[in-house]
Image: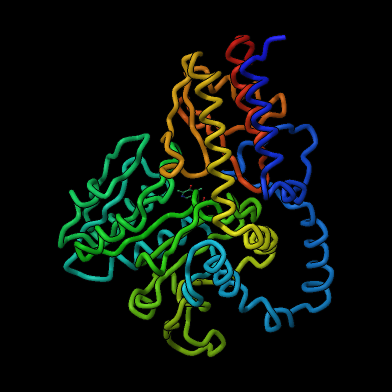
Length: 412
Ligand SMILES: *Cc1c(COP(=O)(O)O)cnc(C)c1O
């Protein structure tokens, strides 16, 4: 009997799963009937198995029984407590600098607008032409509102923004450099400490969008001197659709920068109900109105799992998964004319691998109908999003082989 490339990839995947120190966590996630392979945890993380019971207990006890008393007992502090937890588990951020609120888009606006107003002599915002649309659109809005000039970086689409790219555009006019830590398309991982230092060298503030890195890439926001950061909780933090985002504002800028949506939750004394606005001098100034408490429940169990696994352990498994995906790409997809659109070096890559082929839109539709769920990105990319705690090596290979089978058979 001859061993096919598919057999040997599956053997390798089984061996890696058997040796995976985090494999027990795979069972913590709810089953999805009809789905054999979920490769989209980078867009919407799976629910943990115990979420229905936790939600039911919340409705029964915290809301249903404690009623409005729960605000004092626990909910008022939740945006800050949960922020601290994300900071400690995933961001390398000491307490008092992270809050959970709003959506990523709204928090980007608040922080960009605050940074734009920080120094009247600085009139430029540096952003990237390939960044996620919401980040670009918000920067355009802030520029229109403030009269600032946008300086667009146009980096290599696979390898992403480099220190040199940033050094080439920053100057004494730069107010803010705003970039994504992991590129949502290619998965390229930016050099956060190096680029932050380059922005600071020019006297600019540095903001990072952590949507595709929080919960999968270790980082040290405090140590690396990051000024501002924003990220999603429904991707690798499995908070559920529309779960609120988080924002980080380093201690030294609190009470200095001021976000513009100055609702009552951002005031120094929420219940003073006084005639005029006095901003809170701490991280709470980033809040605006009543926080979405129910939507903050699901991410808490995932933070427990990441804490148990350690973020370094999660990253090690992520690299193992993406390395295997690239190896499988080389063996069974490259021969079919598929392009690799992510960096080859795992240290330069986040948690997903992107591949390209003109037929991928149709292939994706076919795979979804068959219970194999990767992510399609216009114009012809498939993202293999490998959320480390919920994805096995065998699942990864099953997904790659399904892409191969569809392309080979032409049946899509
Ligand atoms: C997912 C994502 C967002 C999402 O923003 P929302 O306000 O939650 O819709 C923003 N930026 C990046 C880079 C993302 O990947």
